[in-house]
Image (cartoon, rainbow, N blue to C red; front, side, top):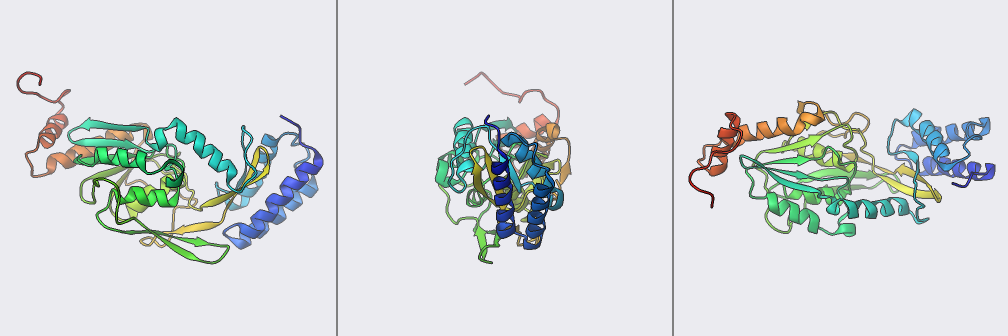
Length: 331
């Protein structure tokens, strides 16, 4: 790692201050932070930051000391990143998509008509990975009688992709959120689309969403939107609390200034989860959240006035049977 020179340090910090002042979604806070970085630079706080990782840590500490905004940072990347706007995050998204089957790493049947669909580490932009991974996952779980959507390791997501996911879990187009953009003062509504490929799970069957302290940004947006619409029961622990969408600017081959430039406004709550996280409906240790949600889902399936094989299996599982009872010989 090439040591940073004093002129480089000054240039990186000064540019981070400028971007924060001009673009941060809360102008008054952005101005204060820019002044703070300039003061800290003049005081020599960053003089000992001989490497990009140390400088990124120090500047991020100063930015978040006032804002408490975890999206606002000077982010260090181990790999060199493109110099284009948002180039760092796009490069990272490509790597993560390749390692996670397009963000749908797990689909499974849990028993009693309950399916589990895991989205991680990100709800990827549809323009980057296409809709196929999400389509395949949701088409597989559509016939289930209850669904557990596992977002415990979901640390981000693109707003349009989040809306696309929501459409599989709702019956009709729904206003999910409004994004306010500081740069032009505009408000843009995001709705779940009227059409999705293949069958929907729908808006009536039991839905449980798992979250953890690691759940962040777009992962939180999905959980929060479904919770506020009264569509899902959220299970786990309070999430990370990042609601302000950001842009990325490469200031060094390994340093990216990430600046929140807009904020989410939920049409039901009138606010968002920034800084406070999402409060689960059922609070439990994330390690236990799947078992807790599965048992709740089994109870919901068993309580239905139906005589389906899944309902019968759910009743047996709730009664403590280790394995579903089977009549006759194997098929």
